[in-house]
Length: 158
Image (cartoon, rainbow, N blue to C red; front, side):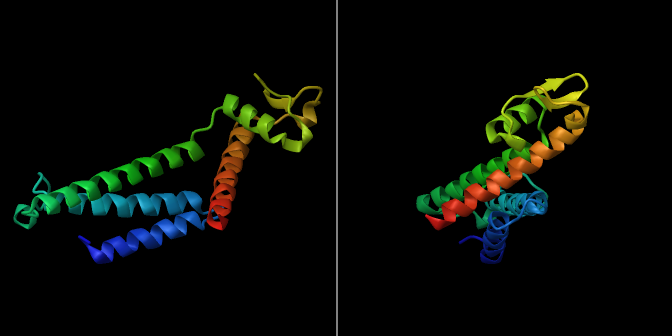
């Protein structure tokens, strides 16, 4: 353990992320990302890499210590990248992706949603059934968040 208090914050934040709901998951992702960034910076300082407060003298002297530090940095970087991708998947949904999500879920009993210049609706739907592209994108983002939450709750049961 390099920074026990910070590592405990990481675990607490990760647990909060995986127990989030669709309304607070983005905030939990951002919190987790911030803590990971702080931890990663501290680990890089240990290596003596350029930074605001380089602590090169704390660099582990043994090969095993350096290997463990490198592994901790790689693991933290991987987790940070995964979290960034997760945030992007929740926040960057196109109209085409919204249609794909609706069709895959058979949203409102239809699997024939279409993107049109005027918005998104299922085939045969009338103007009342038409969603603006922004409404569809926002809804698809919510559905993605709910899918992620459901998927993680199932994994916890296994």
